[in-house]
Length: 286
Image (tube, helix red, strand yellow):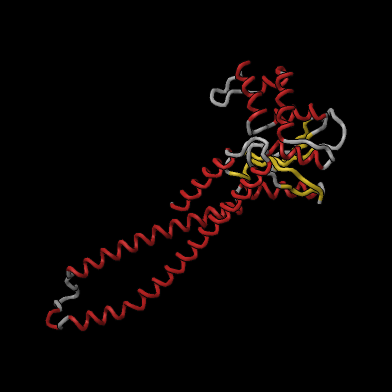
């Protein structure tokens, strides 16, 4: 339970660190990314060490109790006079024996809870190895290998779609930036509301956005690390005059902007990679 709490606290701290990055400050962004990686590595290492130490202490305690049992029985046999031993098959439960029994029960109960906690941690780790995230990663990797491509990690900070396309453009010797792509996206959305507004709904009510809400949406896409999706991919495909291909583990690959010619910009789409939500990565040649 404590380790789960520490992981939740770390996620909150990571979010706070990401929000502290000034817009456009690449140096600060890099420092924060490195800090987050270090914090996650330290926490995972500490949790692993705690589990190993607990397993070792349980083994030592078990051996100690086994070695002490004969001595305790011998001591009792020496202290008790044969005349005081009651007749019949049942021994009379003394106050001392009762007190020891309760103490042992408390120890056993505590050890059982700790074992359950460790088993839950192991179950979660095993689930991560064979769960949706691992399966999705494997399916995407197979698709990329067939295309002679490999995945290129992009930080999960809300800018992943735009940062992934910046990386793809750089592979074509085209300079760009997250800020520039966000501004171009917002400009295209504002200029062509009829093409994009019908596909956007309010996250809480499910109703189509009003004109005012749509204006706020466009502004947030330009000036905040708001997560971009298929609407933004369509807008960027139009702005860049290039097709954009999205490789996903579940379902067929998607190409947006098929009316444009030339080599497509390629991203991978992940539903299960991060606990914080959906994510985009870039790719590069093998």
